[in-house]
Structures are given as C-alpha cells and as structure tokens.
Image (cartoon, rainbow over all chains, first blue to last red; front, side, top):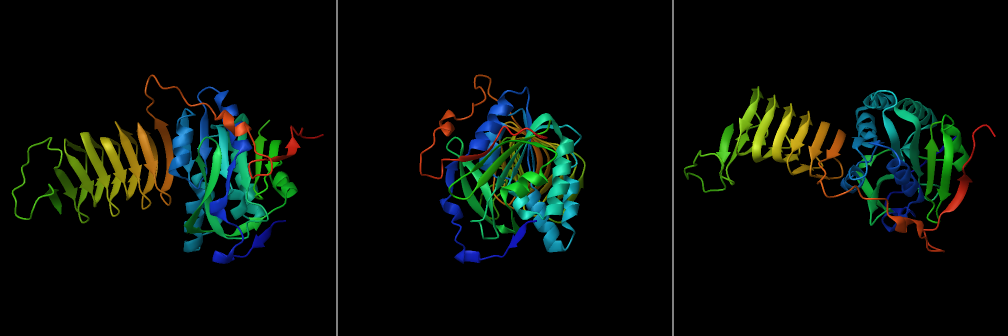
Length: 201
Length: 161
C-alpha cells in the first residue's frame, strides 16, 4: 500500500527548516481537550521540550513515550520493530487524546495497523487522535520533530540522531489504516503536510 | 570514588558543613549504593544508586554514566544518565539528550533536549493564580496563498455512510 521513499540526504527538496505553519488539527485537538475534565494526553514522540511545555500547561497529565527513539534503537540492534509496541503498556481507556505526529510515516502498513489497534485500546470513548503526515514532498528520510511555537504554529526540526524508513501514503491509505476510528477533519497544506483528526466512537 | 568538590584548588580543605551552596558530593562511576540518601547539599551521581534520594533545597545531577532506581525529591534535578523512578522537584527538572528516563515528573518547570528517551508522566505544579492557557485563537486566522491556509479534505465524515 505505502511506497518506501529512499534517502536523498542533503540534496532533499524538502526544506524542513522552512516549514512554519499554523496547525488546524492542533487547534481542534486542544479545543476538544479543554472541554474535557482532567484530560490525559499521550505523545508518542518525537518528544521535544517545547511541546511538553505546551501540553503540560493545558492538560491534567501529559504522558510521553518516545516511540521514535525506541524504534531507532530496535533497528540498530536488529530487534523486530514490533517489540517497540511493548512500551505502550497503558491500561485500556487511559487517554482523552493521543498525538501521533508523523509516526505512521515511519512504519509499514502492518506496523501502523498494530499501532492503531493499540491506540484503539488505550483511548477513552470519544477520545481523539491527531495524525500528521509529511506527504509526497517529503522525500527525505530525515526524521523531524514537530515543534509548537508562537501559539499553534508548527516548525519542523530535524532529528539527525534518528534513522527510520519513510513510507509515503495517499490520504485514502491513511484513512483506511485508521478504520477503527471516525475521521473528524483532515487538512492538506501547500507545503505538502497533511493533518488528520480521528475520534473513537 | 565518593568525593566532595567545592570549585576550589587541589589541596584546599573542604568544609563539610551542610547548606553551603557551592558544596557538592560526587558518587563516582565505580560506586554502587543500595539504600536511601538524605542530604542538604548538591549531589552528582556517576555511579549506581538503588534507593530513594531526598535533597532538601539542593540539586541532584545524574551524570551520563549514572544509573538511579528510586524516588527523587530535590529542588532541581538534572538527568543525563538513566533514571527509573519518580521525581518531585520544587523547581526545575532538566533532561539532557543523553538521558534515559522512565517514571513520573512533578515540577514547576521542565526542559527536555532532543534525543532524550522519555517514557514519562509529567505534571506541572501550577501556580495558584495562573490558569491553564487557552488554545491560541489566532490560529484560526489564515493567510491566503501561504502554508497557513489549509484545504479541508474531509468534513465531519460519518462512518458507515
């Protein structure tokens, strides 16, 4: 289903450091959380200080579990990537919201389906999931963190210590992988980025 | 080695009176401690500690080679090594890129460098007169022709329809 992009290294046409936009899905995500009492949010990485600072002021408890680093470590050790899911060992219906950033871009379809199933188990009924996808312009294997600055603006910051494959998907493929969830809104930006908000009904 | 440092020249006598701001104890990388640590001076752990650590009004540093398993209570905490356990800091927790942390953090401030591995639950000690910040309403404003303007692909899609 997805196509595996090859690394173009420094010659990539994707200028991550020039990405700077206001995220509509992040806005909806925060609005939804603010309507909930004592919201609990899980961020599956890449974890960055700015985002922790942003969310920890808006939710009761912020959980972070950096799957990017875990997947990267497993890949370097030659351990199956599926072992990384053991880290997501939270009790059922724990979270009001889950942030996936562009994690699905670095997983094959089978891995995404495993992740989606885990998310379905740990999100509360009516809980929401924010998914970010780099899109076809992102023909670089460099992993980026989505850094929240200046309100709800997102900047990409390269994470050169992480080496993970990149799987490019069409919108319909992303929607299809998240079938246990109801798509609420999705957006495509002129920089190629796409954002999805899903809810568990 | 278990040492004291005060930022002084070699050979200078180090006073052991508690509460001196510049005084600190270093647990060397070949030292393993099993049991609790209670103190009133800064502590740097480059070795291994299994047990709770309580440093009133002081700074705990887990160095890049340090390994700690236990509950931490201090004024400020800096983690560059491995820490498994819960942290309660009266002020700031700093997690550097070398850190590997698994546990809960309660602090007034927290900073995390890219590259740190975190599996954490984070709660900020909110100051009583400061409310949680609302979402930035300016995010709704978009500039036509720029990256800011989103194109809606799906609107309120109902499953099964």
